[in-house]
Structure formats: C-alpha cells, structure tokens
Length: 119
Length: 117
Image (cartoon, rainbow over all chains, first blue to last red; front, side, top):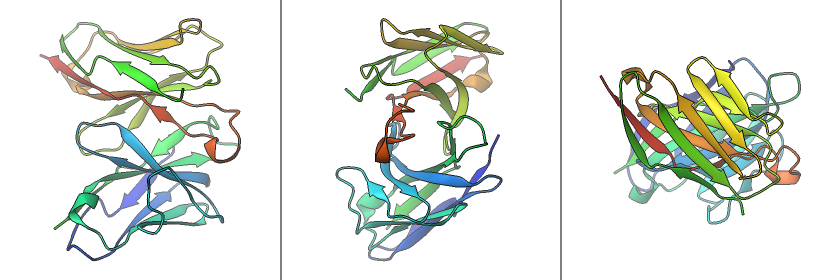
C-alpha cells in the first residue's frame, strides 16, 4: 500500500513555542491531505482538509490562526501549532488521498502520528 | 445525519473466537465504508472496505457484512488472535460529495478489542 510518513514522531515543547509537523506521501502524489487530532481512547477528530496549492478548509471549532496548515506540494503538508499550550497536547495524525490512478479515490492512507506534549 | 455509531465500546474475546463489531449510519449518501485497525501510538491502517453494491466482502479472516436497508455494517474477525488486539474504527464517506466534503471520512467512536490467549 501507499506510504505516508510524519515527522517528528514525538515532540516535547515549552508553552508558548511553535511546533511544525510534516506529513509526506512517499510513493504517490496526494491531491488532498487531512489532519486529525486524537485524544486517548477516543476517535479521530478531523481538524482540516488541505488541497495542494490552496488554502486549507478548517472544521468548525478549529482555530485556523492556531493550527496553520500548508500544502505546498503534492507530497508534503505541514501543520504548525502556534503558541502551543498544554491543552494542545495530543496525538496528531495526517492522511493523504491520492489523485486519479492510485487505488480507490476515496481511500485515505494514514501517517504514523505525532505525539505532541506541551509543558 | 453525519454520525456513524459504533458498538460495542470494548470487546473481549478468547483466542480462536469470533469478534463482531457493529456500525450504523444515518446519511444515505454514504457509499464507501472502510474499517481501520489502530495499535497504540500508531496511525490507523486500512483493514478492509466495502461499497454498498455488495452485501459482504471477505479478506482472509476479516469480513464486512453490509445491510443497506438497515443502514448498518459490521466487521467479523474469525479465529481471533492475540495479535488482533487493537482499536478498530469503522468509517463512512460520500464519494459524490462536492467541494470541501469530498473524500471526508466520518469515523465511528472506536472499539477496543482484546483477544485473550
């Protein structure tokens, strides 16, 4: 199957700093990438959808100025948590959906996740 | 109308037994129903998926049963193994949804499966 990577896998930062998480599709071009947040023992909560070359679409209740998403190329999307606070501590997961020609157009391939801890 | 309700919340099965997880949806426009397996500290991985033109799909020990009229679908894990212990999520999406809804997955609440040796 298609491979999606995330970097870093784990990050600890101080309150007030910004953290950037990268999501890469390694062997396919991702026209759309999704960013999710997951709390312990909970389901995935969609934060935003990003299409290459255009602005991200944020879900209701997600602060776009706090969670900056950039999808500059067909293989890379980044999520920057700005001025992080302890309540932003969570497991962040990205997924990528291929354009035409690679598997089911509805299939999303998930990254391994990034554990963010804000002290 | 966008919800997908999943049950049970947790499930304990003996090795060799059958694990059954159920999901129900409301949006009749949903036309893609995947199941994901997630191990602690990892991202979800696609296990098996079905479209509503068939009532059942089997891949190895994993089977999806789909009941379009009841708007329900379920995952059956035959001969459950301790290595199957994980959290399972059902999901649904509408492939004809336009704009920002295209390709979006709506997830169930998750089921924590424990298979005892």
